[in-house]
Image (cartoon, rainbow, N blue to C red; front, side):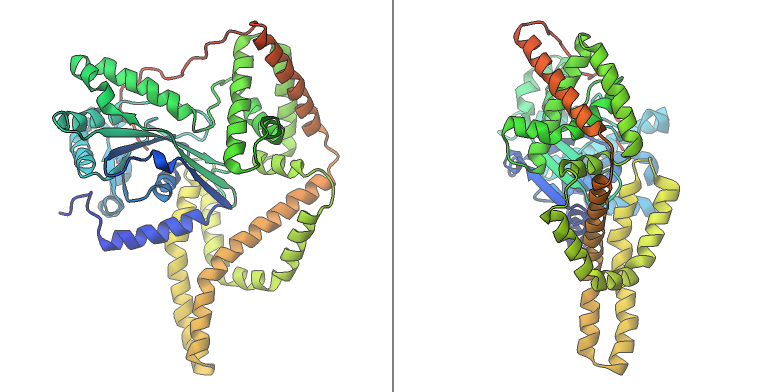
Length: 471
């Protein structure tokens, strides 16, 4: 049996195809901190986990080589699925819910993971254990550190080290295409720096590195710590995003916008924890609740409102593009709608709100569209060749994958136009009201902090969890 750290040609070809399709699912992809990934070393990626296997694809798309993953064991139940997942370099991790007896099977996965690291292949384990569609870093589990220290122990008499790379993943939309994707790598933790303490007292060493990893992961993602006012803070992060970016004096790009949201969330977390601004926070709760009633897609609505209510050159350009490209859009829709309609109906029916929507949608796009286009190319090619020429049949085949990518971009443009016109004709003034109240609140908060009235020590949220849960 082939070792999981070996990479056959079939995997390499599938990797190229999958990453290409995945990156074009988003309107923008920004990867930061690639220089923080050690070369020719034992590397464990530690990303936040909010979006099922889409998170794994994000790591795979951002790294310079294949990555081996751990995933929850119950999805390996069927023999065919087990073979497919192992081909995709995914190994099972058993949890308490799988039965105490099955936990012993983790030894085999952990041993294979150690082999991956010893062969200087990339390994990824979701340190939060399970997934949840929230912009919050949850408690980290210990499986990653057990694997890392076992390999570091093997390296104790060498110069080799095991590195854990804190990884942040940020989506503007968990389920649908057209949003942004940001993957950020922070400077790695060298497990040799914790090894002496590990030899002396393993639990203490694991807790130390876990706390350091939690702290570093918090800096590369949007981590809203407050539970009670989570929805309010999340909404404010987008409504006030451009204002904060302007205050910072930074260029307008998705990575800088994420940093601005991190600053907004951090300040509001402290404000909530201080207990000094309860009236203001309660008022924001009411205003943002009302705002969300009229704006179901927070990210898209907030960005559209940044343009104001004027008809500008950018909207005119989008309209001209939509009109001029409409014949191509009709062709693309006719070619691709059967698969699109099938995937969308299945996802809306079974997967909405489960965290697996984009996982299935992306997988379907990667698998079914090439098959569908191949069938169309064969059937259409036979017809076109019999009536016209082989060259025209070839040109038809070439247009099929192009039509797929064009259809998505055209749809994103239509959504943008719809949001802009909705905003132009809207009489809603809540956005400006919320932004003004945030400006006043942040000014008061800054003044109180400078005067030493605020002294908040936010809980790290890293409760002592001891399991190997992984989605």
